[in-house]
Image (cartoon, rainbow, N blue to C red; front, side, top):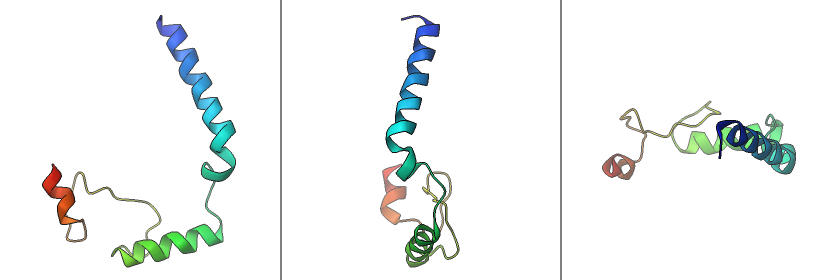
Length: 71
């Protein structure tokens, strides 16, 4: 497969993902989503945080110990 064909396939795939999952997963969080995410992250030791931290690059006291042992 040539480069231009590969690029076209990736673009079609991305458009398909947006069409299928866009309404539910590719949107800004509403008030209910934000409250749920804040509560979940607060319970994990990250109060006020809406994003995620995967602990891959930093060794923090709040990162699961088992995660660091894997790498």
